[in-house]
Length: 407
Length: 229
Image 1 (cartoon, rainbow over the protein chains, first blue to last red):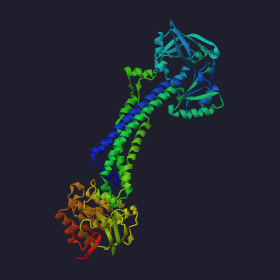
Image 2 (cartoon, chains in turn yellow, brown; image 1 turned 180 degrees about the vertical axis):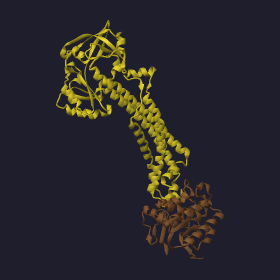
Image 3 (spheres, rainbow over the protein chains, first blue to last red; image 1 turned 45 degrees about the horizontal axis):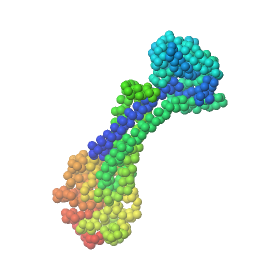
Image 4 (tube, rainbow over the protein chains, first blue to last red; image 1 turned 90 degrees about the vertical axis):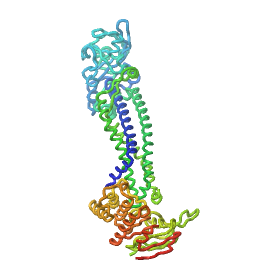
């Protein structure tokens, strides 16, 4: 007979009570895992759509460009700079971009658009934009054609082969006006981008804006995604410290998205806190009952020679068993579902989908398998069980054997 | 050989309000191998005396020496160790651990003493045989009669090979047959293995078996019949 066995049998003295306590933890874990996994999964989708498909996790710009995004604050991009950036650990590729706004016109319709001049081969390695093509073909280096987003094409009523006229201001005040044939139409997940994006090869954009050799930013493809950003950005800042260039992280580039994620995350945490607080008091009630009804037995154990430490160890083990029962069963039963939804995100439909799109997000509920989600819930439950131990610990440490024996 | 030596022992409850002398300037010696009953009316201080000898309660003054060492100044943890290695307890209400079988209840004490598994097994079986419950070794207390539970409690008390056994009204909840059986077992253990037994009791049947009867009244010894058999 060892003390672990004793603790295990102790928790089954009142099966119903133990099952209710473990059951409440089970449901808390299942709910918390689904909620957090769904939250983080959705964040991953949002980041994937907004960051990986558009801004990149890190950008390098002229230090004056970010505030006004003026064509006069472009930067030069050359092989030396590219080599210096590529030398940093974790950088996969440097994607030069020239981005600005223009007024587009087709027939009697006009619309403000966002022009993105890219190196199609390199940029597509990161953004996989070509996979979003729903008609025609993707832009190619040296070819004069452009790709427009689906909602823009729909609004202007254009199709493959039509030409769009753009009017804008080029580098150092030059007027930029030209027309470009449409090669392809892409459908983007983010409605805001799908309403106004025009993609063209970098050299065509540089020519259009009269800015040869100039770019507005360098978007970096990096290893490790969002978790590797801080380290790589720090390295780049050191490498570029004597230049006029600035290193921006995705959180700087997508401040609104970051705020949305932070605020949603905070509301999720608040909900979990309330849930765990309710669970905590439920478990505490059980532990108080388990302790109170066994005071006499505690007294006998100490009377016959058990140290209070051993008694506390047994009580701690009982708590741990209840906690593990609830947590492990919750984890085991949640994981297959979370794994399934991780691979098959839920597509939102109807009004909720429209509302989601209005916030600039893809109407998709993704799930995350980020280990920290599972570890955190496990640790929270252990912490709660630890906190509930304060009561028996106090009762055992202040136990008066004589009084306990009379209980 | 003296096992217990009590000198000028006092236990006063409510010292600052209305003092009650549960034990009043009591001195006593118990020698190895005694089979002693402490008797007296309810409230005469029997249980209080046993509790103090067992290190479960602190005296107001006086000394209790167990094998020559005064235990009154011992810390709680030292007293726990003292009880584990030197004193066996038999309670009126048996107080077995309900989730453990008869075997495990007896073995449990030796586990606290970190005895080896084989030693624990051997001693437990030996004791269960001595109390006539070898065949009930895998039965939990709830499925044993009161008498059987008390016999397991005696086996448990003996498991640690204590210097003496303190038994507080051990027969109070038992019928005549169970009482007879229990007393015979304890008497046999006392005679064969020279184990010292100290009972507090009202029970005439216990008094009849005891070889020394100490009568208490108002916390004082009013009669000590010495070794009477």
